[in-house]
Amino acid sequence: MLSARSRAYLGIVLLVATCAGMLFTGDLRAHTYAYLLLYAGAAAGYLLALSGLSALPTTAIVAAGLLLRLLLFPGEPSLSDDYHRYIWDGAVQTEGINPYLHAPSSAALDAVGYPERGLINHPDLRTIYPPLSELLFYGMARAGVSSAAGLKTVFGLFDLGVALLIWTAAGRRRKEALALYLLHPMVAQETWSSAHLDAAPTLLVVAAALLIVRGSDLRAGLALGLGAAFKFYPGFLLIPALVGNRARPLPLLSGFAVGFGLPYVPYLLTGAALGSITETGTTPEFNSSVFYLLRFVLPYSTARIVVITAFVILAVLLARRRSGRAVTTHAFAVTATLLVLLLPVVHPWYWVMAVALGSLAGVRLPIFLGLAAPASYTTYAGAGFRQRLWARVLSYSVLVAPSADLKAIATDAKAT
Image 1 (spheres, one colour):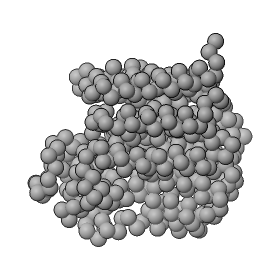
Image 2 (cartoon, helix red, strand yellow):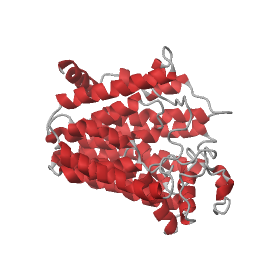
Image 3 (cartoon, rainbow, N blue to C red):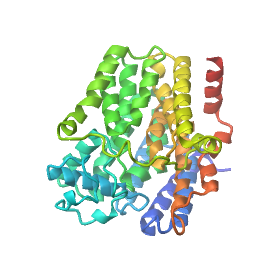
Image 4 (tube, rainbow, N blue to C red):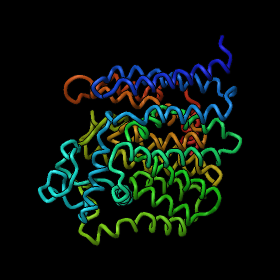
């Protein structure tokens, strides 16, 4: 039987070795099953390290977390091509053009210089990113950040900011909370390998939760509004913020209106601020759980109404059950998890926010769901784009395993 110290360090070695393996694998999409094998090793290393966490000094956690990120940093993103759109939208704006007006394939943008224009996904659709994301893309373009490495550096700073907030706010749980987030292989991968921007709204959401705990409702609303202006899903956390005797409605909503609304102004003044957000396909579905099951018995539009209604009702019930400012991070973590479970489209990076909140609040369910989420990358294996049922089942297998979080949520819902 290995000691806690041996398990912890063996887990870290496994984490580091598998991330190094990803770096030397090259194009991870072209070597999907090799990547998944390496990622499974990283996930096992993570769990092994957590099992011996009591024997790990904080310095080892920080060193391992930083090493994981440094190992993932050099490789060109291959599991996602979203970063091309980020760079493109920034380049479009440096030409004085509103990115919401034209799709990348439009002849109106032929003067925009980007050698990899042909690699932008959905070239016939205008951008769907909210305005604060677009302002960040513009700022990076103006600063000369026009490469995947530059994006990783900027988004990586947000990621490290999340880790710092978790460390400073977790109190007696700070070592555990920091390890849960900083060693999580999916979080490190999606920011430092795939160059996704989700760490930016995550930082603002975590800050909003902590500001509510401290009674600073105006600033909390501002942070939450800014988060929703990066990506829309932080806006759904208004429910647990307002329900359950937490934030005062007027200052919270005032701050939210400013944070969410102001970034829209420059784009509205120049012609558009929504792009293709209301046009991108009528029936998108990817790696969903509840929505996938509903589609067996309901039309797409009806299923969408059902999940929206279910989210609002369940979010209100759970927020009322766990009331008070002191449990805001827990309420945010549970609500963020519920949101992703009900979404029609679920990519692995959608779990970054829920993992961060779960790490801070001690809610393990989103942490393990996020850990399993990269199973969906099997869609890239072989020819074409094919969703595999076994990968979907694996992504949500945590839901059928014994879980203290699930039992607590079910008990709360029943009691409410």
